[in-house]
Image 1 (tube, each protein chain N blue to C red):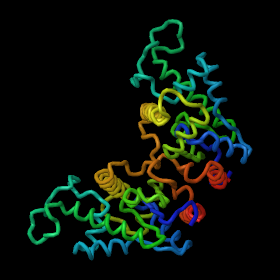
Image 2 (cartoon, one colour):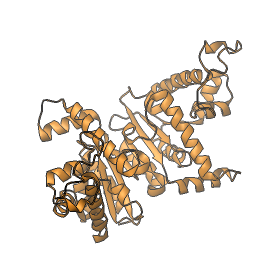
Image 3 (cartoon, rainbow over the protein chains, first blue to last red):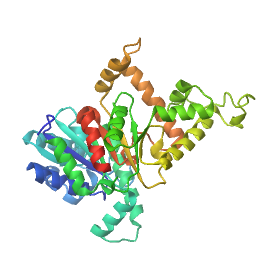
Image 4 (spheres, each protein chain N blue to C red):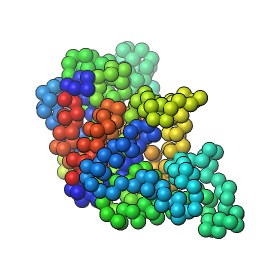
Length: 201
Length: 201
């Protein structure tokens, strides 16, 4: 890829279609794509459930205090005094660093933009969308719940923001953390993928 | 222009080349371009000096408290009890709203993204760049001073951020406030202009 790019990180708002964009980019460029695969590897290495890793690896816990609930649990010897959240962060970070070594790839979410920032061969992208478009999308994809979709999105955003700030000391969604930020509801999911692909080539 | 776009607002970090990008876009699309022209109009309507309008219309004052220094000065009857900063904001806002009515245009900075947000025909862009690239650029354009260029940039950023937050209650540079955010040091100034033009068409 051009511009010395080997790794494309795609961070995204929940419901923005960022994952679809990421998949399209990886297909167009015929490079690796790490999303669920990354979750699987982290689950396997930590022994945690995949669903748990998916949730806790990007979102602040309910009480958003990153507590040390399990840290004295003898059955989790690997924790070594760390909180479960910190343990998950350490393993997730290690696996992201390893995946980036393997070859050109698209990596979705999980603070990969921050974790890989020293490499100098990353193209960091953020995908967001209007609240209305995201609400439509999650209702279409995941169905209705008792909670209004806007409320569900606000909660997700808040937890992802807290998680990102806690581990990176940066603001999630600040333009300056990315080389490119796209509003998929304005630009369109396919067009987003096209722009990223052209810039990465 | 497509996507129902009539107005392109271009917000930019100082030294990012955002103004050059804006100019190129306006030329490519053959539409109005408001930057110095906007400053001139505000200066003419307020009676303030152009250099003052340029500074005070985008940057928080030295003490960053938006004080009412002149508000009791009888010679500035138009202030009507407002602070000079607020008066400038009101006039600047009015002129931006008027310019947007005139016809398709590119408007640079001055919270135009926020001021025009109700219109629904704006394409809001943010241009930023790495600190190193911006430092190079301002030294090349404006020469060296006693202060390190990084220091000068940090001060400018801080004041623009404060100004934006004060009048919009939003965070300056948050991806979500724009349809597109571009790192001109990664993408290149000309390529930035090209992407914006293609998306606006």
